Image: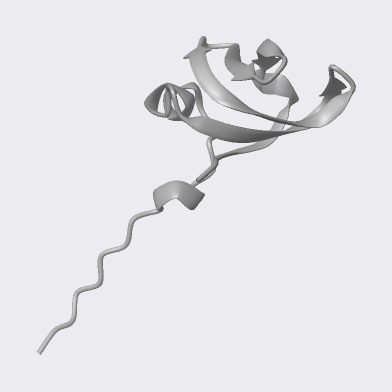
Length: 78
C-alpha cells in the first residue's frame, strides 16, 4: 500500500523572478527591500505591471516602481 502526498507551495511561495511577479498581477503583495525607497524598507501594494527589471505596485500613496535588484524578499498578502 502506498500513500501519495501532493503539496503546493501556495500563497507562502516567495516571489523571486519576473515570471513570479507576472503570475501574480493584480494581487496584493508585501515587498521587503535592501535599500529604502520613499524612506521605507517595506511596501504593500497591488502588482500593476512587471518588466524584466522592475515591478510597479499600486500603494496607498500611488504607483511605486521597485527595481528587482533592490528586492530582498516579496510575497503575496492574503
